Amino acid sequence: MKIKKTAIIFGISGQDGAYLSHFLLKKGYKVFVGLENKFYKIKKYSDLDKYKKRKTVGYNIFATTSKEFLIKLEDDS
Image 1 (cartoon, rainbow, N blue to C red):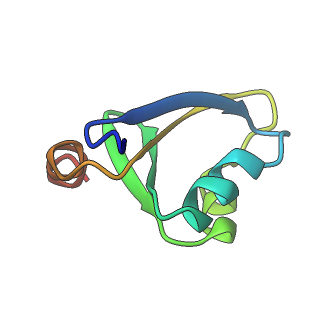
Image 2: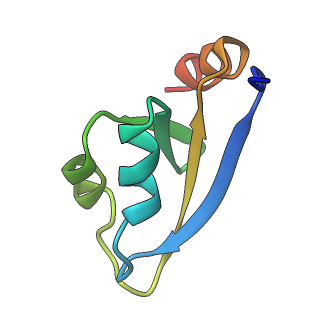
């Protein structure tokens, strides 16, 4: 059974590695970082580094394969 409407939301700190993001990208999820009321698409693992500027700040990460969620995330990009 495949779940079609799933969104994974988690946080990482600026000093953490983004291993879960990397894993999800490899599994076919579309990954976004939420900053300042906007979503930025992460196309490859190293893209996240350009958004993680401060080590003491937490960053919200969103991942999904759902077309419904992707439309909403990409509209806010």
